[in-house]
Length: 56
Image (cartoon, rainbow, N blue to C red):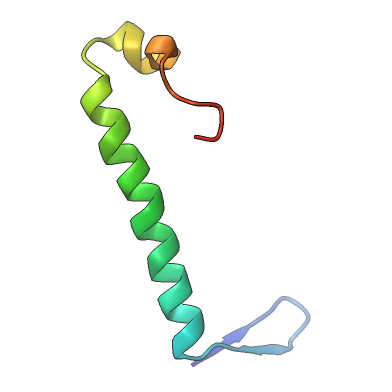
């Protein structure tokens, strides 16, 4: 599948690209799911309970 860029060029994406994109979304959603278990109040939501590591 080809994606049209702003300059009129085509960007060819193959199956490997879509697999990597899907893995990225699974990883990000997984972080959200794990973080959701630690959030119980709105204050925890905004401050992250000060328990999330810096890499998140």
